[in-house]
Image 1 (cartoon, helix red, strand yellow):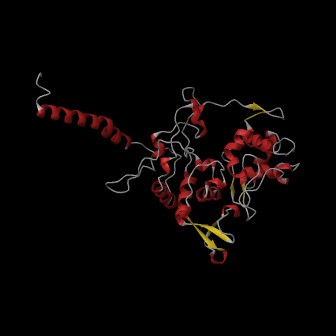
Image 2: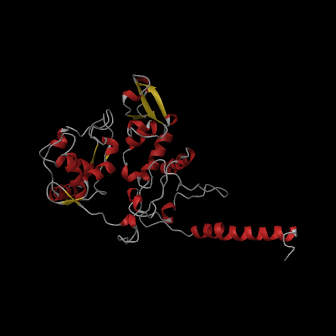
Image 3: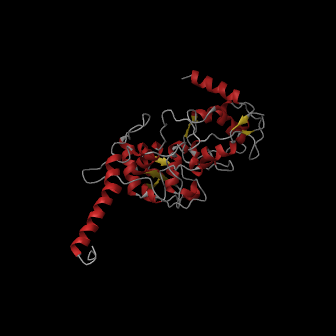
Length: 333
């Protein structure tokens, strides 16, 4: 043993043995174990469009700035309702062929927001298309690069009926009288982003040892009811389109400041728009509804925030009013 460092065969053999053992227990064993992971019952397989969008997401190296992992810490409760688990990546970790597997999408840098639930936070297609064409259109402070090669700028006379137009405000167009058309690759990428929603865990009550699943304390509001924080809910669900100050985005999303719908004495229209979405005016993007994702209390909190800010001064609504409208909406289905 005293000559161990002088016996090159023994030295190299020992190093090789150690390397093989470490590789086996650190890489190979976990790799085989993770192959046994099963999807959650509520998870759906990717459609053909979403799978193509996944490949474009990888091609554009989006995971260099965006993560898809909700950590088991308090600060990550913004990005999902629970910490991420291996089953969340069951369908995204697909083998492309015998030799290649889709790269990990967890990411390590959170230069941009986590995308675990971006399909829930931003369900509208127009928002994503505008964000890809020029992120500053919808998020003024964004440092994300633009992806103009996913779009084509056409003369209005050359636009086809089959083209998917993007409602880009004129101030962001380099040439007047032209329109932006989304490529098929852009539509695939948006389809993938819209599919990113955290699946529900079966029988997953809030537990104290998972900080991100703790119940939030409600806050008091102007009508004396205990409601969630309306401002926080608005910023998480509405501000990206309608802006933090309710000014909207010209040619894409209508303003809420001074809106006759928001200030209407009867709040039914506003509540139904939040629940069912809105697609009645061609000059604005399609808004997806929040009926399945927001509770009556959360909708009431958002409505009251919108009706009492940016110069709006309409009466507050109660949870009972929201419940009554939800019951009516469900009865019409």
